Each structure stands twice: as structure tokens, then as C-alpha cells.
Length: 292
Image 1 (cartoon, one colour):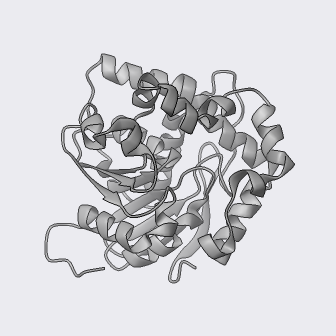
Image 2 (cartoon, one colour; image 1 turned 90 degrees about the vertical axis):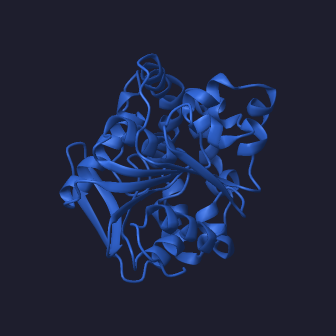
């Protein structure tokens, strides 16, 4: 797993970030979703490493990265705080500007990073996500039926108790689906009650302070100037819920393109070749590209 990559940790202002780095070329930051760790990217990162310097961190609150301290306003688990920490990581690695791709909860961190640090993010790819405020304001019966966990995870204590009874039964996953080493890293994370709590805090921030940050951007007519690629899984529900996903993102960015990936929700594990090809085509500098 991650052949040619280095596993490391860097101490930042708020705590340590665990990450892998490898490859050569323009820097590309890959952000995982819930409840995965950075190892979900192992197949994609290996395919991208010849033309990109690929950095795969555990998000703050996830995996082996620092666990944000609880606050009643959830500010330490906000996407703004997580984006700031990962920009600090890229500073430490010597990257003044970079591309970023985020999946699921990582897509919200990546979006906030591009919005708050426009001079740092050259290009943004968002995988299986729309801005949190868009999701909340478009919430209808079907959204609540399919994404009920957003509202359950917002409740105090109960989600952690439910998950802690049998984390693997709650989340699912297997070595056959995920790869043995990726599954082992995932299982270690979801079996740690502290990590489960800080992963759930990410959702509590989503329904409060993260939505407030999106409202502030919209009220002040802020939009992304960097190119944006929206990707969605063909066997997931983004199109069913939102119809034209690209049109949703054009409310928040000036340059948006989009495509589907033939997979279920965990596209990095289920369709790594197709996903790597889409990311490479978007992030690779102008010029002739070999096929992945």
C-alpha cells in the first residue's frame, strides 16, 4: 500500500497531522471523507504519483491526526479550522500553492480552504458533495430519508453510544472491498471512542458554524475564482437529490465542470483508475499527458 510514499507526522499549531507523501510534480492534496482515513486514497495516490506530488493527510479529528478540543460552538471542528490546519501543513511541506481534492466530509474542508485561502488553492475538486448550506436549504423528505445521519449525528452523546456498540456493524467495510491494509487502518480508527467522537463533532459543526460560514460567504457575494471540478458517484444519490450538480456549484464558483464516476460512494476504493484519470486530467499542467 502506498508504494514509494513516506508516512510521517508534523506537529502544527493545534496538534499533529498524520499524512503520506510521495511522487513528483505539482502538489496535490487529497482529503478523505467519513469514516475513512487517508489510506482510502492508496490506489488513487499510486496512480497519480508520477505526475503529482501527492499529499494524503488524516483530517483533523480523524485517523491518526490530532483530535480537536470540544467547544459548545464546535468551532474547533469547523471546516474553517481544519482547512487552516491543512494549509499550515502545506506551508511546512514548502508548498505555497497547490491543488486540492476532497471527498464526502473532505469536500467541505476543501471547499472552505479554497474560499478562505484563494491565493493558495490553484484548483479544487469536490467529490460527492455540494456546499453544506445548499444541502440544508434543499432538504426535503428524500434528503432526510437518505441522509438522516446528518441529524442523528448532531444529537449529543447518542451517536457515539450507538456506534460504539459495534463500530464495524455500524459502518460496514471489509478487507475484500477496501484492501487489507486500508481496512486495518479504518478499523483501528472506528474502534477508538475518542476518534468516533471527534468524527461526529465534524457533523455537529456542519449543522451550526459551517453553515454560518457559508451564509456569510453568500451574503457577501463571495465566489471561488479557481477552476472547480465536481465529480459524483453514479451509484450514489447526489444527482437524485440535486439534479444538475454542476449548476449547484456554479452558485459558488465562476468556473465549474463536472463528470460522473462509475462507482458507489467510496469512489477512491471502488473506481480508482477512473477517478485517478479524472483528477489527473484536471490537475495536470498544460501539455501532453500520458494515459493513466
